[in-house]
Image 1 (cartoon, protein in one colour):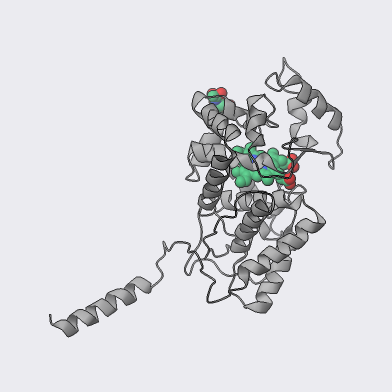
Image 2: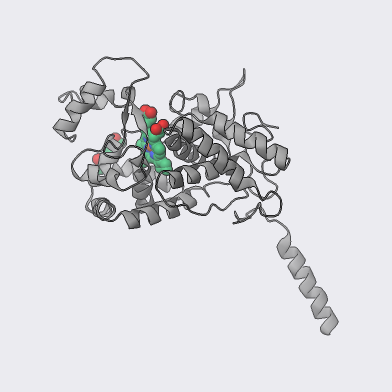
Length: 326
Ligand code: HEM
Ligand SMILES: *[C@@H]1O[C@H](CO)[C@@H](O)[C@H](O)[C@H]1NC(C)=O
């Protein structure tokens, strides 16, 4: 083959390598040419939301987690129920506790006006989670994008894919491993409980109805238990009662979540379970004493979580309204 032949072959190879493949990866700067305002618009809307209600930061972080663990990070958490279908957001795991959908809508409306049908709803959720972490004192990590939106959202799938707060260490490890995440990543991602709240109804069994022989979980610090009981009276069905997940710094992304675990002040059994093996307890110790390592590893693990089961290339769609499939 002569020089010319080589050039033609090279051109073909280059052209071939540019065809999006089904296993296409997420990319950094994916919207740089098609919608450069994307990250600014999302950030502005998240900021506006947090200015009204700082608690929404936790919602966006949890929203990304709940999106990614159910059918991958495909924006399925945002789809509204229809007469024939109860969607993920209306599972009791998400409703009424998970909020902030209106802020995602605001960002989407502005993005559609700026660049029609370019930015996916699933990417907006990933950005909103990152911005919430950054605005709460965590690291502002780069978010690889190019996710496309799914067309299916089933409440039933939340029960089988999202770990409940009663899980022990092996169950948690198995749950995260089924999503391609290691036990170490499970320990670090649990650190998301450094911000936000839990409803009293979620912990009432741990406080009052733990087992046939113990009313309160003996693994819960007694002083903390009595504080929780004051905030969450026995038998109360008031679904608006909540407690902070990380009382020492409820709105700051820091490592005090891990310090709590060292003194049996994990709010859920699943939190305290991180102390139940030598290996994971050593990680808890490390993060409790080194907030720098926590913040870095947390950011890296969030990036990895954001890649679970993503749709790319020509899979899925760019939803025009995050609440309804096109
Ligand atoms: C390790 C297993 C996990 C379990 C069992 C779990 C369970 C829960 C439960 C039961 C709540 C409280 C819901 C309520 O009653 O209001 C909650 C809240 C929360 N979770 Fe998790 N979670 C886990 C992991 C994660 C991960 C990986 C993230 C994010 C990366 C996350 C982020 C949050 C946040 C930010 C809140 C506070 C939400 C708010 O204030 O509205 N969780 N979690
Ligand atoms: C965790 O719970 C499962 C299911 O209840 C049980 O089979 C397992 O033995 C438990 N593991 C530990 C370490 O307690």
